Length: 283
Image 1: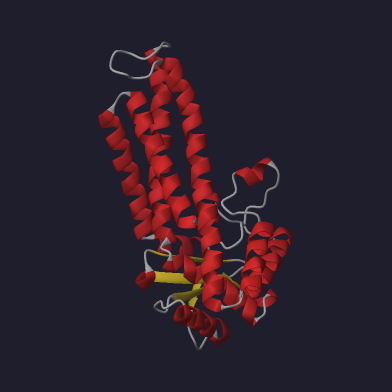
Image 2: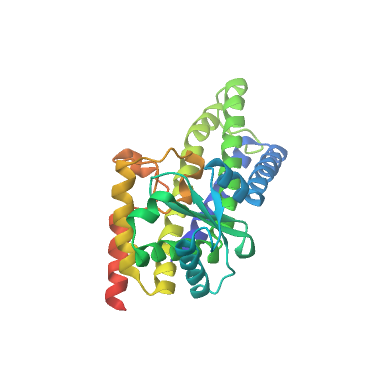
């Protein structure tokens, strides 16, 4: 179901992009925007592990320097039938974790110092299994595709704003291009729609990683308990995270309620926990 929902949302994002390109009236401009966004995001995807690990000053560890963590990651990788990823520790007391890398053979798992202090072994294994699920489900690739389309839509919206300013206000022309007013409306609405679709896809991938990780570890309640601990601790000790990388973490490092939660890259912890508890009852 999550895979079907992701495919549907990706289709919506693509159709939105094509519609804006037609409205703007420049197929050439649409192609240039897409290519430019693709170059930026594919570059980020290719070097994502180095960029994000360097951003958070993550330090690589091995079996000698961090035996407990390394062995847990090795068990989780084995359960998921994946190669052993590189293991990193982030020097912060805020409990959190993420996975990065362009594929199973070039993956890395990073955890903070804080997460190793507040979680027991089963809970930490549940978290690592969740991150291994992201690697197995190739969510980093999916995120790159989504970012490419969303970035291209934002660029087209920027072009549409200028076209509306200098092109006057009116209806569609004989070639089906949008007039100034319609361009201005689309320039405002399109980036918001793209953002909401992007957030919906990210939330779907989090649910899928929870389910896959819990299935591989056979410990859905351990992951559920870990999520509750992580959310509570993250509020007490906020992480200075970049909004562009917030979707990588297992719990949202950018806290927000009310309207802010609408734009969250993560589904509510309560719903994630409830799904894991239902999964445990089924087991």
